[in-house]
Amino acid sequence: MLKRVHALFSINYSWFTALLSVLCILITSCNPPAEDRRGQATTSYAKHFTIEEKRDSLIIHIQQPWLGGQLTTIAVSKHPNPIRLAPLSSSFIGFLDALSCIDSVVAVESRAFIYNQRLNERIAKGLTREIGGEAQQNTEKLIACKPTHICISGGPGGGSSFAALKGLGTVVVPVLDWQEEHPLGRAEWIKVFGALCGKYREACLLFDAISERYLNLAKIPKDSAKSPTVVLGYHYQGSWYLPGGKSFVATLLRDAGFAYALSQNNETASVSWSFEQVVSQFLKADIWLNPGLCKRYPDLLALDTRYLQFAAVQHKAVFNNTRLMNDAGGNAFWEEAPVAPDKYLADLIEIRKYGAQARSLYFYQGLSE
Image (cartoon, rainbow, N blue to C red; front, side, top):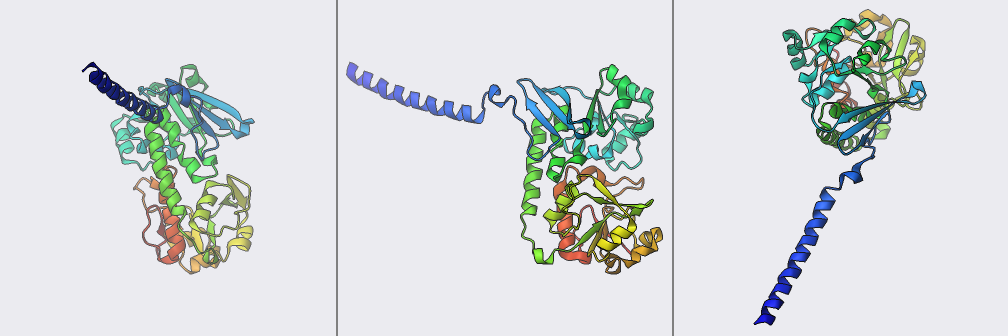
């Protein structure tokens, strides 16, 4: 009898030990120790920031190329904390909206040109205040808003006018999404906003979904023999600004299947050409994108009758990102496109494929008569 009991116990113990081993493997594979995650850079496409994970905090490193690669380092808690944001560019609004963090915004430069409905409602109620443009911002108004973080479009000398607020403990965050070479690098800045707002994990998941949608669109086969040529921008005060060949816009054009004459250019920002230079290179371009604020061909020709020489004008193949605008001039494109490059790319693919007949567009629309 004792032998039977001992044998039964041995079998059950062996089974229990095996089960426990399997559970340990599953647990450790799904949830690696915090120590294993610490110090990892968590960017896939962005080149101007990294985020380092600690046990209870996130360390954001932002590199500013015009300052010799100088780093701005910002530490934030992993745990949700009350935050009061002053995003001083409309291009940051889309990131915050995607994270449902609009209610954290206490100050903006100006209500003019803001498209986001919830933010406009907050401004109307006095929950978010207007402080004026960055160059002449009303420091007293900004201090009265008590922002914990001010987000600025980083650049040479950027942030130098906020010394008084830094002295009060306000953190100035230079956002360099516009310097990224890949549209997904620009979209990946949602992780910075997520870290600031205590929603880093949500931001990572959102970025993964954006990335998947974008890459699926970019993989759609394009007939390179039929790649339409494209020109962008317009002539303004003696200069015609075109996207540099290593800019995120040039990457979007390539992924959409366009032939862009400046694709071999090495600039990440815009390049300035004369009207005559553009005519020599782009006069016969099949498609024209982003001609200022124009919505109608008469508006375009009112700027310069020489535009009538361009093939895209003659063939009615001029498109602008003005489809979603409010009465105050707020444009969804400038707020949403940075965090929704998949929608931007989908529009470009539609325009490349159908030309003047393109209709299923989100940001863009063809100029009307």
